Length: 314
Image (tube, rainbow, N blue to C red):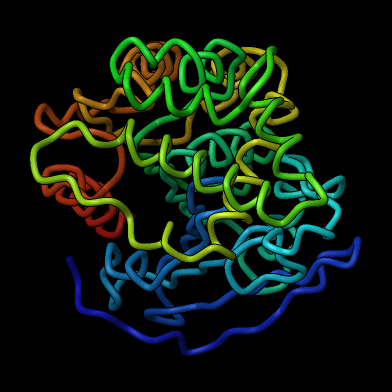
């Protein structure tokens, strides 16, 4: 990956509804504009994202989506209302940020949840997108939420049994955890957040030597992450079922690269494959020895290659 770089500009964008979104720009002020969409929802945009881009070629805009990272208010505060934190609000924030930093069109780089958000943004604002590079492709559907929270237990039975036991009661696990995370008792909320994050960590562990994510050791991060993920998943990300796949034709003329690990059980390969079939301008790159996320060498290399390719394009 490219060397670490520091932002040359940053600020807090007033997004309305009481939200202020942290943003920063890195690289070459005269370079090819690109925007980074982090995963989660709720993961935040860490400095590692900057290292995917050639700092001489790109002007990179990064931001923390509503409720997480350095944006305020934080979903880690249990009293913060999440009703104005939806996919539609995030899409409006991206457009507001584009106008704020003075970009006409930009490359969209996103992973996992960020790939869903990137496709939704490109389908609504195709004239603002020069290219898409998306990894660990995720498509927000009822089937996928049920897969992550219910059916995947067939692959990780012991971990899923603990996840299910932590929910207590009946009904969809994502709904049960959302209720627990809103409980007035801090101990109940913390246990629910810990149980949810333990399950998240379980289903990305598909190769030997996996180490639990250090970020889950932070109780504030655990709560904001679990609150945001359950909030989005239980509402189907406020997208019509299969909306992303059905809207793939809207991406015609926009070049893209879809990068996916063959061992990704968090988001199986078939959605990325179906998307590539419906989007003729996209190339699908399958990394055989990778699971979910860009932490695998092959995934990182594929992302770098795609971004370098577009940096060299006219």
